[in-house]
Image 1: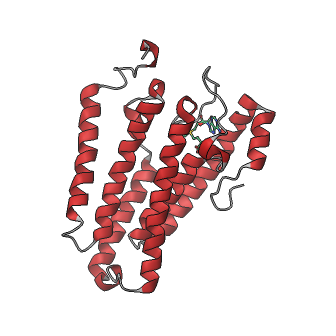
Image 2: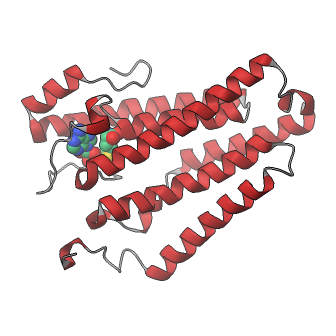
Length: 234
Ligand SMILES: C[S@@+](CC[C@H](N)C(=O)[O-])C[C@H]1O[C@@H](n2cnc3c(N)ncnc32)[C@H](O)[C@@H]1O
């Protein structure tokens, strides 16, 4: 690999990367291991999936977009709202488990089964879409929106981008919705859907204004023909 493509060790301090990856792997392993023994299995799956999500953010950036990888690529500092949403979700999950234990663990009810199955489907599909988007976009992907076009920033229209205009946002949105469905968290489901929908609507508008500047008519035509597949976002 030519030196210019190697990750910068100042923004990727090896001991910190190793420790973060170890911690995320530990959380994933711990909660997957607990699934058989705990009653609230969905919570274990949620925690394992949350840790896996953050591990994959760094791993995929390091592998497919090494010039832009940094410790921030774990996306663990994803803003106060993100942290609050997950904290509220965990609190809701435990409060409902304590005060409404039967309702929370009534896995035999058909409505619960439908919500939980859909939730797992959204989570798996969302994670796959997000990771696939990052692999496909490669050097054109960045965790922050670029306001200046880099020299290797090309318009991506192939692979998953042929079917979904913002597949990493689509993936993130449906993955997060899925986590709240498997937890049977009605309050946090509404909270996640509202916060994320507002965030992505704003972000897509901002991002597309720059993509139109970078790629002109080509992006305009792409935007007109490929949907975002996030409800009520054109
Ligand atoms: C966090 S990435 C998200 C990419 C895309 N919105 C998605 O959801 O897969 C943000 C960066 O991707 C770039 N980007 C978004 N769509 C792109 C495309 N189709 N081709 C190339 N770059 C794109 C933007 O310029 C921005 O700097």
